[in-house]
Image (cartoon, rainbow over all chains, first blue to last red; front, side, top):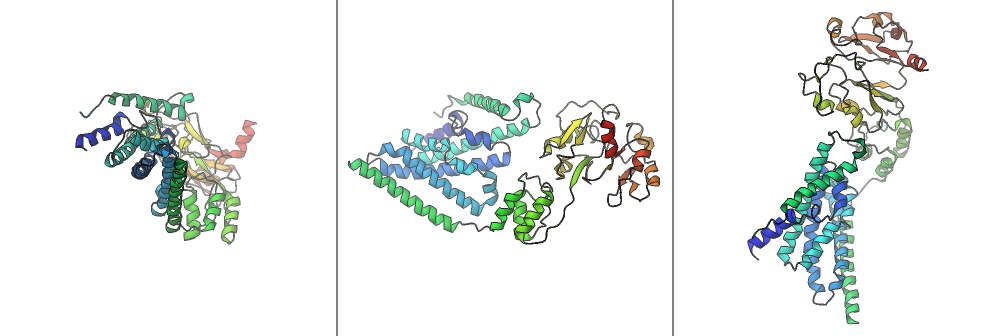
Length: 194
Length: 272
């Protein structure tokens, strides 16, 4: 496992194959929690946390599934793992950081069905990543999510003061600006750490 | 066949392990909540306006139960909510008087001179950066009319008309969120039942005020002299009503040379 290999996975997950802006996974929290910078930051950190843990546990469970030729159970087992993990994180947050728990509200349980998290663990398997590579991909995938949602939240905070036609108020203008940010991220395609 | 058995066994084992971990976590991280807190949070309007002085409805519910906050602090909910909260807490209900916000300015477009033409971000706090820190208005005290209060209002009760903000008394719950965002500080709380209001905040003497506004208070003291109840006084260059003394006789409103002491009853008649 070379250093450049890790770096190229990280760069890929954060910029080139950004889960939200390039692969269009996990759009629900991206639109839902990006109204304010604080909650966007909290959501991003929660996703990093869940993605990293999910990568670790799914890798371990996959070690059991493969020798038994039960690869067809991967999706099912991973969903089970992610759902339990999110439940666990929710209980932990409610006890340890109640303010973050309240700020995330409905969106924390929604990470359960967030396709970006399931996407990370399934891609880990598809790309035959080792344990370290999986964890790196999980964490950096989460960081990519954080970067995207924080960028988007800062744009939306500015939109509050902008003048635009009545018909675009609220979600329409948010969707248009999300599309523009995604276009900007297309500029990273082809970027490579040799 | 063996594959099926393995599949069932593996998934079953995973489920049992995760179930056990979650059951353990539920015990370990259990947060004890007073059931009264949830009951109160359900009764509160959920607008999170902050009128009670707490961060939001759930924070207020928490404060009532844990630190004994007043049961009648919820402004939008009024007496009905206060009564229900008191019932849950087992204490005597305290009465609340319904209050509404009032924008103390009558400098509508054409009556108040502008210092400069502002075409920046349509927001009062942004506009305040210009014109020597008082915005585009000629009057350093008057309403800027860019509607920061309109955006802040959780009940959609404030609207802009003729260049200044107006409050819809029926929609206003008196939470005063608007007052906290108004850079001029000219939105005040008045009793809902109050008929007489003064719509000017200028502290300048009449001769200065005449230079920039046709309608503002000249501090002529006529209202003060005519009031039989000592309820209206000129303080800091503008008339101020003491609502504990005012009986809404309306004499000051009829005598005000600038017609900025408003009698809500007269307005209604005029509109009809």
